[in-house]
Image 1 (spheres, rainbow over the protein chains, first blue to last red):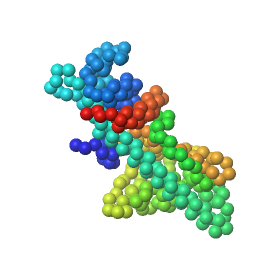
Image 2: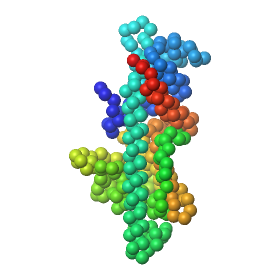
Image 3: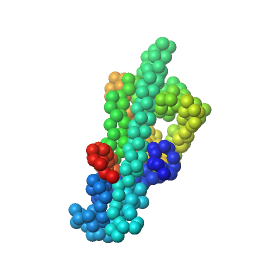
Length: 133
Length: 153
């Protein structure tokens, strides 16, 4: 299943989980480590003054969000960063940015049109005239 | 004219318009204005598809129709703040996304509009979580830059 940035409820809820998972410094540090390659729980826990169960809890949140996956069969179950989920979240951000950039461009044009029409009609484009609907 | 992302817990887009604040605000809540600019490029937003009940708890709905293939996307939202002419905010229940538009009078006839978006579910919308969300997105971009520069697989 490819992760995309479409306005699909399933993808939206995945993104929601991804953003929630990212709202924690430990989990972000774990992801930074995994960006360099797969790692076991022990390897991931090493830089933190934190118990293994505490780190495991963070890994569960990351796993649920789809940002990481863990091998089922291998003894040490290395964690793997899921790049496509990261890409989907970045795609979502880009899409939102595009929408608002284009919306602002169009609003800018519309405001010029509206104010020109007011001036043509002999009204200065002041605040009172802006309320005339 | 700037489009700044990743500021204070949200995605942020800012633009300065050459128009008085009252007019800019009216544009954001009047269907006869919204129909002219709401849909991004390549889409249109028919006026009859726009519902605006500009009060807290009131509906804000639009249908954006793709000009090329006729496909449409319905946005369903509920206003959570209506403070004319300073601030307008709505939440989309389907995505838990809240958009806040702040209108700043820059004097003369210039108005700055700031759009803040959060996609964070309500229980996480504490100031601490907001800060975390912002930082996470900043680092997120850094991760990707890092990933692009390495062979990870």
